[in-house]
Image (cartoon, rainbow, N blue to C red; front, side, top):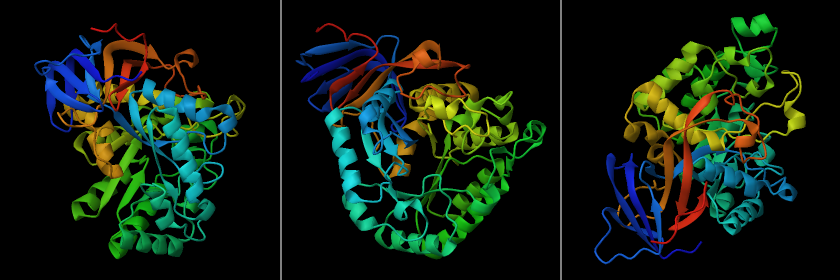
Length: 434
């Protein structure tokens, strides 16, 4: 719907960037916010959204999602996954490069961006492959990929086996100011593991991935950062020991940011239950002490952002034995609810807790944060904080319906999403013109 003048009336306005938490209106003209708190005199909206009882927030940003393209264009996955993003309050999605084919060619990145613009949904920000084909042998054409709009370079979940190649990649990235996004995962120590090492994995007879696989990789990575000055984002931190190392590295002043997935923030290895393949994840679910450390680190800012780690998995690939099931889970629609649950569990005010899916995440990605301020781009969501729901298959819009969070009751549902002053998604018919 093309709207010239839009009024969002009577909502609870929360802007983590500005520390704003108040009641009021948001007036939008064209693609920009023109007033926050009270509409200006003479403002005549062509459309009004009743936000009484709702939260009005800047749109969320998800730092780790897979969207099915390139690779599954024939299934229309980009449309469905971006619609799922909006249902979860996510207006910006950072796309991992482990597509099919891998995002190591500018033409593939340009095609993805073109497709996303045509859909006119959530915005897509691609990460380019750090090495060609993610094989870890030769560097990708980072300069060309940057010109094609990649915001950084990643190996996705493929660990680097050649430290010398990683050193060269970080030297090059540092020279030109590119950010490198990496999973802290030692290839040898994690090889063959399908659950976190510990008593529960032993009881189930599942091969383990020790926390040491993360900490050894972090030690190596930090040494390379000291040598190169390269800015690094560590994706999907999973262990208490890893948190302690990240805290030390940040105190040292290394140019480091990191995130944690919704699954590792909310669950532990006990949630595997009796070989529940929905809990087959990478990184694996760890012990309660790890989850508690991740929550504390997200609350105090050691961990910058919360991500969905959205990984669409087909029913055939997920309905296998635990060992044979593909790792991953749907998550885009759960990011908002998980952030709200984190706020409730941590005791943090909403205006502070939601920064991990707002301005803190945007800053980690090198993107300008969305904000509720006159003159800013109109990119926001309306959320019902009283809604309670379960992420069961019929409640999800993604083509992938598998999540270990399905049985948990979650708070909050997106009612409307606004991008560039347009209502691009609604959970119900929009209000009649004022």
